[in-house]
Length: 310
Image 1 (cartoon, rainbow, N blue to C red):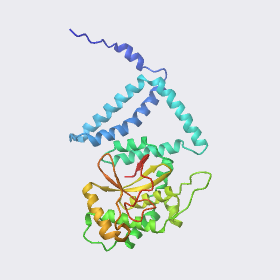
Image 2 (cartoon, rainbow, N blue to C red):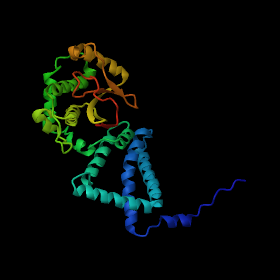
Image 3 (cartoon, one colour):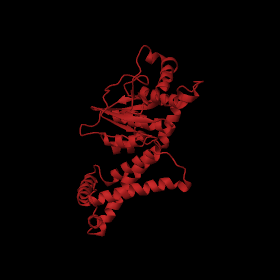
Image 4 (cartoon, rainbow, N blue to C red):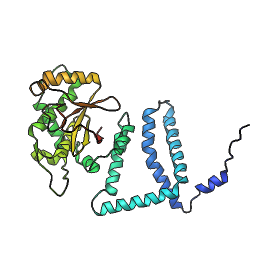
């Protein structure tokens, strides 16, 4: 007969008891912050049971929160020490004007907002774990809701490819390609100051269409997102460039035909279309400032980090 180890519930209870109410409050807040993204992932990936008042989702949230709370309470001493050290780092970052409390709050809010609209929210978590330089500053600089950025993107769609008929399923991509054409035709590459990276906002770059690769990528991503496209930024060794979501391999075939035979006939004649396929099988096409047509040659192809903007 197999004997299972006896659980000493009083001892477990005593381990969960805290020395001060602040410990419990801190662990509760941390549990809530972790529960929200975990819940979004479960919500998007689990079958909707269609219970009244979404009670199935309420139960999932409560269960996740409870499990995380008890686990974190068991490790509360280590976690409290780590939190204190992290708060000191954030305080130092805030004082010297680097990554601080404001930036981490914006990063968290941006992540939750993006995850809620993404069919694969776990990809956002993975992307957050990948290295990407100046991530918070770049996210803030992509002002896709700025009227100047939106108006510029609309202007580009009226200037290029407006008369293209018969491709209604790819209208948004065609309009995004119009934005690409307008920006890349006018872009003037200018280095950052020697002291370090200068991150220009999208509206700032609209003044002179000048800057380095991250400035170009920010403007491209903002303008594309402003008219309904899905851009992402790719970090390679010493370089950042934008890509646009094309869709499936079937979509790639149709978009390839559009580029080669309708939109960028001269620029792409006899040349290869460059793209990446992510872990979901989705196709992303290169829109670097060096490209004369969507899918032009990569300046540097190796991906060290990706920042997707949904």
